[in-house]
Image (cartoon, rainbow over all chains, first blue to last red; front, side, top):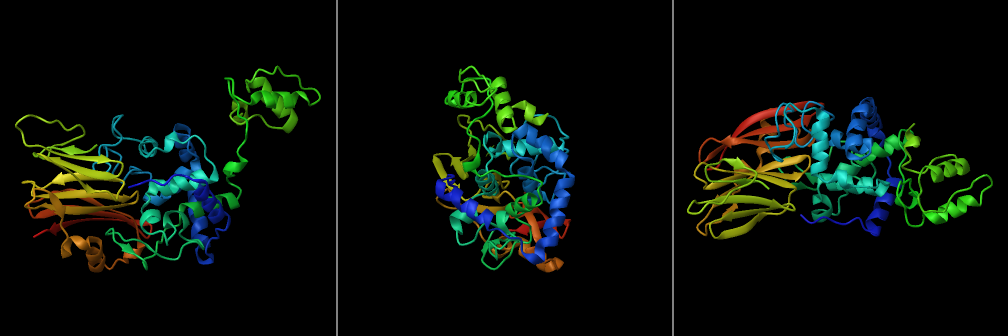
Length: 258
Length: 149
């Protein structure tokens, strides 16, 4: 199955859909119940986030879609955790010894699908990876329907889905809350903050030389009380200067987590 | 890569031996390829992943087909005169969940993350499946036998 690239047009589509996304009033309570339940297991999702670099809410949303937040089975396909998966994808996780923890299984499932290779998690990237995780069948073969994996329970989805037998139906309707809707609700509640790619920081903390960082250091040297060596290394001292000037360390500085 | 030899022994790294009939299934970028004798062809290309299990005499294939991450169906194929496997669609194979839902009084629209799981071949004509899904905050698990004749 071909995989669409995250083009500028697709990124804009995701931004527009997300910004105009509204939970259907009749589904509001169910969405909030789902969000509450996911939040109560945030620690577990964060543990997998540490292993994969994917945001915890991305993992939580997938867990809800794939198994209704069931921690007793493999994220890959719902097989029991006391042995490797038997069904497609079979023989997972390849490493380790059963029984597996849910976290071990989730790490393997996300790695298998390439999620751990993603370096930057903007809003557009989150939505693209969610749609891709589910598969591109909706976008490629039924483009008149926005994927319910993302938009079910919102103003962006009315009907149309693959039935349990794998046949397409224009009238069948998903009764699961879409993953983008969950994320949108998490953001509305102030639990997460998503960056659009255009709002990503230009400079990052690094222990190596990074092209263009000299410009940042020259700029900072223009601020009273800051004297930096212009060496192109946006490390500890540059990050401290950023903190002094703007109140936060460079993104990626471990002191942000302290 | 998923591969299997005619004795149904599933293996991740299929081996090819001289003078031994072989059958290999391989998944590349969402497409399922079959290699058998001199034939090498694509069987399907509309899913994320596949697991192929031949019937005891290899006249048929049952293929667990992950159409979406949360939707797996089992498709069937039969070998024809040209030596290739072709889709086998019958009344029994076409609405497995639909038939089960009718008998059980389940609203098929309420099924979440439905997955058909292949348990194994009972004979050349009968196959055992497990139907697995979430349903109204509970789980449905039901074994069924599908007759292909």
